[in-house]
Amino acid sequence: MVAGGYAAGDSPLHRADPRAKVVAVLLVMVALFVGRDVAGLLPAVAATLAALALGSMGPRSALRALKPLSWLMLFVLFFDAVLARDGTAVIALGPVVLDLSGALVGALADARLVLVLLVASCLTRTTTPTQLTDATCALLSPLVRRRSTLNDLSLAMGITLRYVPVLVREWGRVREAQVARLARLEEGGVAARVRALLPVVVPVFVRAYRSAEVLALAVGNRGYDARACRSCFRAYRFRTSDGLLALLGVAVLVAAIVA
Image (cartoon, rainbow, N blue to C red; front, side, top):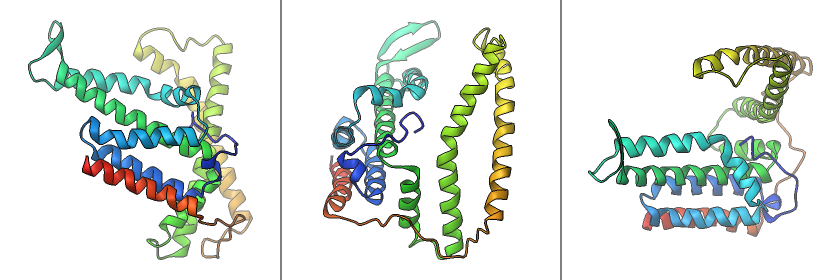
């Protein structure tokens, strides 16, 4: 999500109502886990490719969004190839046997993960954190009876979405500072690397705690009251194209169930 952060633009997805985008993305994600085979994933694949085109998200942006979890995809593929067996061995490395059926199961799981990341990246790339917060709270409003709970949720979501990129940048700055002090962060085994990261992790958490404390004091000094009626600077209007976008998510889910 961080790698595919918001990028200003004027694509059809940028202009779409954030509520419709959130609903469509959630339905496509559900469709990804409803489909049990390749045929069940085809509707979600088509929807993902359409989202990439409508959001003006090129191959480089897509690969950048997938890069942080590439290690997880390799782990899932290897784990399924070792454990899920039907007797069709492909490679035998001593006690470790890679099975063809397990590799296919792992490839299907990786395909789901890739599609989920791409769809989520399309959402975050074309929707600002404020719009995401407003859309989520608007969709949850029928389920939340107390206005104070909804306002607290809105504030927490907005702060979280805005502070994730800040923490990522802070991590990069502290890491570069430690490397400039000749810290060996990439040398040795796994245990040595974990110990070497402690001088990076501790300052980042300390600064995050201080920022949270300052933010809490600022919110209190400005008289924040969760029971007050929360206004919105931008008025969202649900247009025909937004309705078609939400219906597209429903169609993808129905097609995945039928397939």
